Length: 137
Image 1 (cartoon, helix red, strand yellow):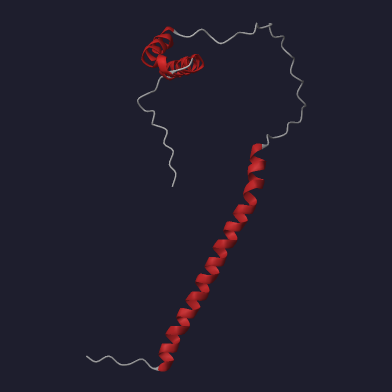
Image 2 (cartoon, rainbow, N blue to C red; image 1 turned 90 degrees about the vertical axis):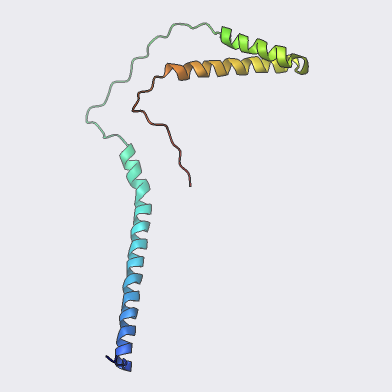
């Protein structure tokens, strides 16, 4: 079976369809850009409106100030026995190479690490708790 060749009129009609499709896609593109711009412009206003609490008809009474007991200023807390043990190991191992100021800095750092570890151990996780993933592309 032999195929017939398209005439110029038929090929122009196909070209016109392509041009019409290009105009439609261009208008779709323009519509998408306009929609994105409108969302970009309206987002701060919507966010500000969402963050303001609804106004109430009755004014609230000012809060009564509670007297606070005078707290005595406390110095740094006493180091835990575990932090002292870690410090002794570090002092025995690296003591001759560190100055007294550096040894005190190591002692403070070890105490902070021990306190952080205690806080982590205190927070109990359920089996259903998932890890906190931070995904950045």
